Length: 305
Image 1 (cartoon, rainbow, N blue to C red):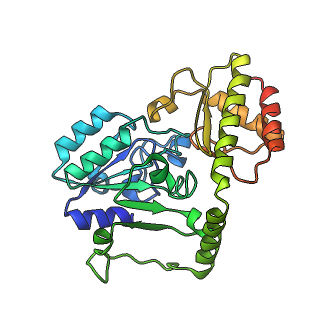
Image 2: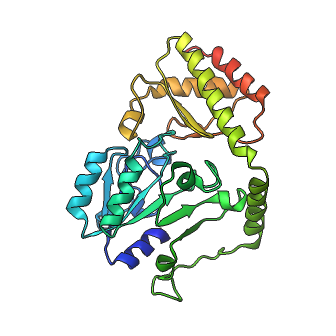
Image 3: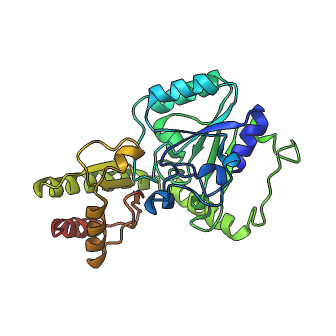
C-alpha cells in the first residue's frame, strides 16, 4: 500500500498494473482478481470496496508479454507503477517465463513507470538478494514481509534513494505505523539475516532439496498415470493436478481441485502438513531432512486419487 502511494507521489500518475492471481495484501485497490485467500475461497465480487477505489487498478494475465506491451502503450502517461510477484506464490508456484521480467523492466524504464517487486515470499528466500539477485532483474521499489523479522509481524519497503526521499519528512508522501521499527521484530530479523549471511550453503542445499522433491514426486505421479504439473524454483514448489503447463492464474485454476483436496488430507493424515490450498506455494526450509523428504515421497506413493 505504501509502495503504491510512493510510486504515485513520485511519478505524479495514478494508475498501476497488477497481475491476476497475485496477492499484495488486502488493501482495497489490490483485491481485484487477487490470489491467495481470495482465490481459495472463490470470491468473485469483493464486498465493501467502492468501485472508484479500484478504477485505477489495471489487471493483466501473468507471463503474457504481448498483453503487457499493449497495456503499457495504451496507459503509459497515466501509469505510476507495475507491481508483480517476480515468482508468483499465491496461485501456486509460477515462475516468470524467460525474458518476461526483463521486458517489464525495459517498459518501466522507457516510460517513467516504477517497477515494484513484491518479495514478501521471495525476499531472502530464493537468494540473499531475493528474486532480484536470483533472476538478475532489479526493481525500483521492493516490498518485504515477515521474512525480515525472522517470522515476527513486520513489513518493509525500500528502493532507490531519489524515490525514497519523497517520503515525509523529506518529501510529501506520508507513511506511518504503530509498530514501525519494533525492537523485537528488528532483533529477530537481524539475527536471521546474520545466520543466512554466515551459512550461505543454505541456499544451495534448499535448491537441491527442491529439485529432488520435484523429480521424485513427478516419478511417483507419472507411474500412477495421474495428470500433474510441478512448478519449482529453489525452495518454492507446488503441484497442480492438470495436464497443461501452469504459467498464469487461468491455467492454475484448470487444476483438479477435488484431487488436490484429497491429496492434502491424505498427506495430513500421514503426518505431512502442506498448505491447505491449491493456490499457495509450498516453502521448503533448511531443517527439512533427507528422512523428511523420503517420508513425503512414501506418503505420495500411497495416495489414490
